Length: 246
Picture 1 (cartoon, rainbow, N blue to C red):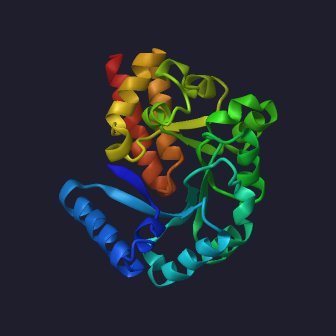
Picture 2: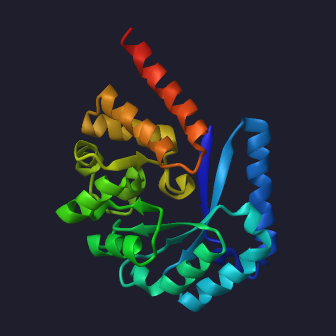
């Protein structure tokens, strides 16, 4: 099993917990899961967008002694009024330190935030991206560059990004050739791990096996695994769905 884990460490440090205490605890839990449950992981440190870029820089500086444990940086928290352009400098600095880049954009915020994340922050992947379908040129860009979107359907309902599951845009995204993927999002808060997200989305949108297979394949394509690891997992996905038709 493979997962990527986003963590907003500032939520711990602002409560007086030292950076090293928080990240060592997270690392210890992930390593335990790897040893006992065969779960591999990539760790993404998120900057909180409702805070200042100065706060983000402080988080970046505190992270550097542990940079070998961290695969990328992201941008989360409340979108509205906090565009990606607010964090251009810290994302540039993060890239110079070798971190991969992702950002929440276009979940509750407009499609313009997705453009900013791509063109100003130079992200490798868009987290969420629900609003992209409102902009045909943006859809063309996402398809051409095969920019992945990490959609979290059950979370979208809980946060009122959509009112009910049957409104979710993921099937439309697949039809347009977007590299859409399905994920869980803080299950303890929003309910629903990966299986529940797949199941509820499939039921609400009446997804067929081809669509479900494509979503699973897209998840591996969007990952930061090596090409060889991706091929191995994607071959297993294709074999599984082929067995359903045999």
